[in-house]
Amino acid sequence: MAIISEMQEEKRPSVPFEASLDPSNPLGFLEKAFDFIGKESDFLLKESAEKDIATAVTAAKKRLSEAEKKKAEKETVKPIEKKSTKESLPPMDPMEVEKPKKESLKPTEPKEEAKPKPIVPNKGNGLDFEKYSWTQNLQEVTVTIPIPSGTKSRSVTCEIKKNRLKVGLKGQDPIVDGEFFNAVKPDDCFWNIEDQKVVSVLLTKQDQMQWWKYCVKGEPEIDTQKVEPESSKLSDLDPETRSSVEKMMFDQRQKQMGLPTSDEIEKQDMMKKFMSQHPEMNFSNAKFN
Image: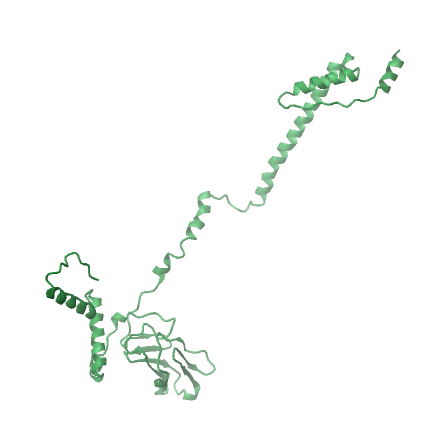
């Protein structure tokens, strides 16, 4: 009979197990699995069935525990590997990381402070530099360049254009090379060598009612309010030009003292005259510029 039973078991066709696992109720899945095993095999009829099931559960728990342990080891290894690549870098404070961002917002602030203040001009109303100097009056600018004693004119290069000056010695870098503060009259400009040791360049201004703040671009600016015109030469000017120069000098002094210019005084006088001629008008709420 045992042989027949074993033959019947061998001939018993396999039946697929159909059930789904609900994570919230795993025991329900096990009950269906045991029912299926009981119907399709004699496993549960064995005396050792409970012991075998307990052994299988223990083995499954062991495998699960080992898998969790390996997973935890992998997770702890990852940060160590990353840290090893940055051993040379000290830990950074989050507040320190933000500092460069704040500082990067400041490049525009010092621009106004970095702008140099105008310089007091020399006695010739210009400036003195290591390799040359320049002076001016309202009509002309004179550039003076020291050169080796005995230098001939053929050894000097001088280009005077409407808006640019270039002066130097042949075969050497230019001593003066740049754009003028304002335009000149090239036909009324000239240069010469004085005492065989100084190149003197005379530049005639186009606008002869304006003081230059610098001779060529790139130089420090002078304070034109500190310019002192030669009053002795005013008599050499024609009446119209002399009147304009005197007016400009007066306005310059008034600005330095914080007082109204000649134009402003003239406007104030006109307004006073108008108000006196029209006493019937109320100017109490009027605003004047």
